[in-house]
Length: 244
Length: 361
Image (cartoon, rainbow over all chains, first blue to last red; front, side, top):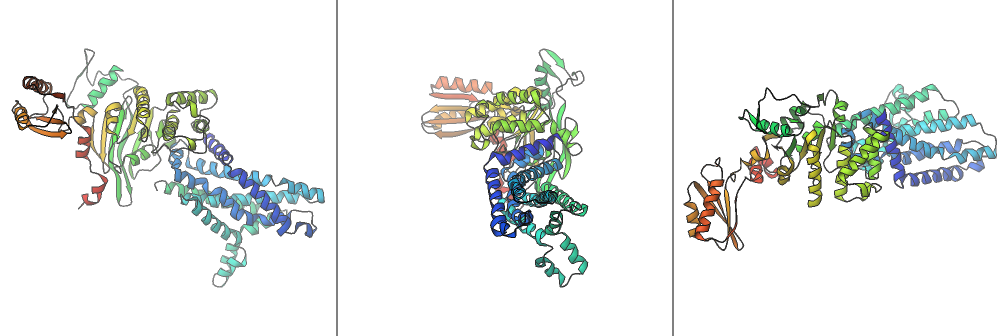
């Protein structure tokens, strides 16, 4: 546990040691705002809630989260520090989890800094703050899902650009698996059961369910098991790829 | 520490049953059971295969407290791979290593707590400052509060990092980065130190400092360093182990290895001026000379005299050559008995990378 905490602290501080954290947060907040107010037509909608704001989250995360996760393991392998890290008395799971939690905490900080949106809607009208809170929780879970995928794919390569591109592609599939772009591909030949199973993997389906204000246990289990699965895969990949 | 030295001599000089230390005789039986001397690193049948390639082939050795083992071999011989397995980074294909009694496969964390490891190239987290990095290592090593501060202070002092503590590691010179890696390895004062090329890329002054540091720590630790700088072996190692293509090809004190050299006990005589047949002939006629090699070097000529029996002491031959030189009034520039040449032994025992492919054919 001590070791996990040490790795967590180091990783989190690592984001802020370079301009990365600053640039990321500024761009995250800027695009969130720009999308919500201009693309989303926030004022025109006349609704004092954050539905439009949250609707953009999956699509922003698709590009921004892999930018956080791409360095997690690829950087360690490129610089060789992975040899140092894994020869320290640290269990592999603590290293995998510590790094993931640091990245998740960082994305949580970025997400929390969107609080002016919340202040704005409360100023403009009388929104259901429970629904907004659910939206934030859902968004945070979804960020965790993207990060777990990105962290595993970052372990596959020592090249951060490859890690980024592959993560975006895989995250995209997970995002849209409930939409026709994916389901149509399977609908023609696969049994209905398979199609609906694939559709149930969609981030959008589960995220939208939460943002409606209902935190269903099934959605929580979905994200928790998705994160757990990808982190286990991450541990396996790190272990396998050590030699290379 | 006298006993330590004696023990090493005993270990590495097979055939000598009794050693004499300070006038007393000590045999295997009445040797005290001290804290030191027990094997801290025990490596058994360690093998690592990468696909069809066998990087480390059934290596076994042990290192006792007080020993500095120089791990030698050409590039690609399996030095780094062996160290990665000892430190638990790579899983061996078969065999295992025990660190202070902890099997690295069964109890990796317990074993890793006993090890300080400097991986090849001294990797670190470049965006951290030296101090931040050492604090991180202290935390991972479960040192906190004043214990952590003391450990960091000690390591910083030993590696003379004081001036660069607040600098990001990425901005440091190669020498300082290597020292940060060293500080990290010795931070928790481990009983076992494994260092992969600790002086690689350092300038001669820094090399000297690092060797001095290793020498200071040597007496109560078991230390393994890999290097291909042969003079280093002579300077700091109590024992040298040469591996080639994954196998141990030699194991002994640097002196014992040098005794394998054909230069061992040869006498080297350097005269100014060109070689003459007459000088070579006179040297060849000295008693006990097998052959003579003549090497002209600029204005000087070096004659290397190989005695018939290399095991005999060379002092008599040196005396004989000195007498002859005086009688003949030769312009002597240098005259000495050769202890042997490690690089020559190294070359004769190992093959370079380039012949690896053709070795099987």
